[in-house]
Image (tube, rainbow, N blue to C red; front, side):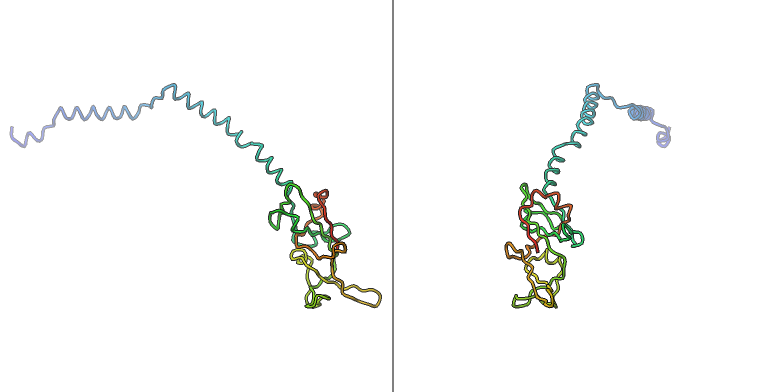
Length: 201
């Protein structure tokens, strides 16, 4: 037998080892992994415990109670005078000093609200002239601006044949409108017991 004939013949021992190794791999890949009973039980117990605890976390009462307590002192505002009409057709403007925080859309009145309710008669108002003795017909102002900016504004009042300028001031304090926020009748009614100061213009 020559050298070339030796290379052509297979090696029986190596072939047998390769076949056995491949069979072992196939057997391992088809066998299901085994889990000890103790591990399976502990996993089921964990899942069962999670399913019981999850609804409890989602239905905590403390968060809703806190939200309810906070919202009890919140007052919504409106942006136009037509939505802030109150008793006797007057426009309701809550003074900004009534709030302890919040935004222009929702005021936070604090735990013990004290509301300055201002009632503005719908009419044509004007900003003051330079001397502060009358209004300026070239400087009209809306009630929305009166409420948001505050100050003393003027209107024209006719009595008989005479027309004169009148400053819109609270007769009890002789002061003008306090800068604040327009509120609806519904919003202010819900805080009726907390209205401590009233001003009329």
